[in-house]
Structures are given as structure tokens and as C-alpha cells.
Amino acid sequence: MPSPIRRLCHWGPIAVLGIIKLITWSMVHLMGMWWPPNESLGAALHAALFLGLAASTLYYFLQALLEGPGFVPLGWKPENEADTEYLQYCTVCKGYKAPRSHHCSKCKFLLLTLIFS
Image (cartoon, rainbow, N blue to C red; front, side):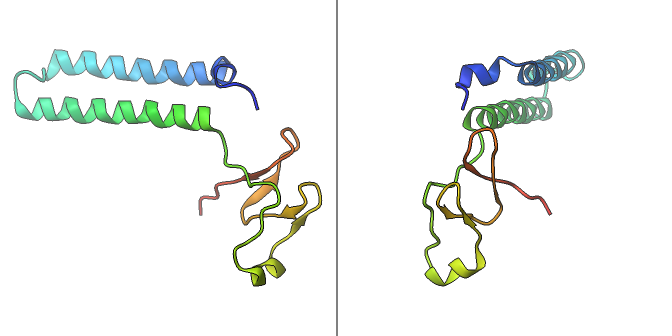
């Protein structure tokens, strides 16, 4: 796995960080011009809500970027032994494949995948 700094120094994450910065700066500038937060309670709540959402967007993007996908531990077995008949066995990792996992050809580990249905 590449280091966290190396993952950040790529055109994709830099572009996303630039887009987040551009949208946040534009919104703060327009809010200050058309609905200043120091003039009404509604404007202050709107500014606080927007800045909270912008901060959480940045936080969760960096978490996803730096944390990476979840790995299945080597030699993983289900808690209930009866469940092994429903699982596939990975001969490379010498363990059972967890549900919704696949073997990555680059890092040679079983990775947990997210399936949105």
C-alpha cells in the first residue's frame, strides 16, 4: 500500500480537494455578499450548517482516501463453523472469503467491497 502522502499527491485527489475548496470559497463569498451571517439568525444558522457540511465533506473524503478499503484478516474463519459450507475458500490467502470480498491482484489481499443496492 502506498503511503498516505503518496496517495494524496495524485491528480484525482488534488482535483477533488480543489473542487471542494472552490465550492466552499464561492459559497462563503456569496453568503457574505447577499445574506451576511451577522445580520440575522437565519443567515447565521445557514452559514453554520453549510460550513459544517463542507467540513464533514472534507473530513470523510480524507478518511476514505487515507484509510483505504477494509482488508479481510489472513486465515479468517466465520464465528459459526456451520457457515463454512456457504463460503468460498481462497487458496491464495489460505482462508475463507468473507461475504462481499474479492481478491485484489495488486495488493494480494482480500478486500471488502461495498455494494449499494
